[in-house]
Image (tube, helix red, strand yellow):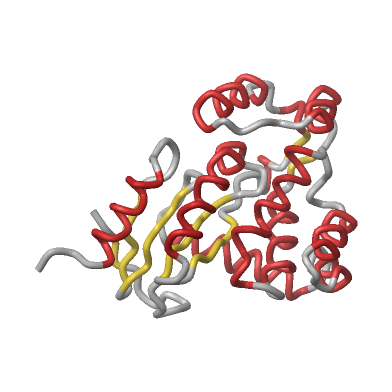
Length: 220
């Protein structure tokens, strides 16, 4: 199954990862996706956009989502992902607000400086939250990531408040909706104006590579 998407912002064949920095399943999947990227980045680029999980009325403190601890246990069982002590303390406290619009702005601020490292930069953001318990609405979170990655921390932090950041986040959300993505993580191959779904959670590296190769070079 595939979907024709008219007027995509790029005609470049690429793997597109639609994720959300506050999505626990994305936290679990990202290391596995990194293996796929490492195995196939010589063939085609890998890009990431924010899907917008906790926006509008869904943007709320952790305590508003009592199902999260049970979901995290399931994520660990399925993916092997671990959640840090600082994150668990934040979860118990329950006051940190998850705002995916801010996270999308922050990712855009980092991604604009190193688009080829988008997946890695998202993972660094998720480490900041799921390991270190840091807010993705805090400019200092992005200053620290940028510093560690050799990027401009002030430029990254500015995306939380400037028009460039707002426009980039909104563009991500629009593209995710046009692609019909409502669940995260979603992995797609964009090729010749079509979006081809690729396996994600629970798939082995071999299965992901096989699926990708089959869509890149379908039988004649």
